[in-house]
Image (tube, rainbow, N blue to C red):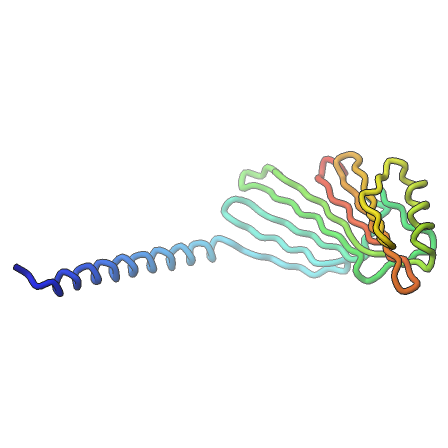
Length: 176
C-alpha cells in the first residue's frame, strides 16, 4: 500500500502540467493574434483615419472634424455657431472576401445660439415636418425623425442664456 502523500503529489503534478500546457497554448494564441492583426492610423487635414486588418477582414474608421449637419438633412439654425465638438465618423467593415458587409455613418456635434429654446424648436418643426417630439422637460427638448434609413436626433437645451442645439445622425451606406 502506497502512502496517501504520494497520491496527492501526483494530482498536484498533473494540475501543474495542465496549467503549464494551458499557459503555453494561450501564449501561442496571443502571438498568432498579435501577428495577424494590424492597426494603421493616418492624421489628415480633416480628421483621423484608422484601419484594423484582421484575418476576417478590415474595419475602417474615418473621422472628420467640423461636419456640416446639413449634408444629412439637418439644417443649421440661422445665426447659430458651431462648437469645437462638431464632427463625424464613417465606419465600414469589409470581409476578407472583399464583400462590404456593414456600413455605418455617424455625424454629431453641437451648435449654439442666443435665441430662446422655444424659437429653435419652432424653427425645426417648420423645417422638418416629419419631426417628432420624443421628450420635453423644462428647457430640454429632444426631437427625432427617420428618413431613408437614417435616424436624426436633435436635442435643444436652454442653459446660461444660450440655447444648445445638439445633433446626431446615424445610418447605413444604402441610406446616404
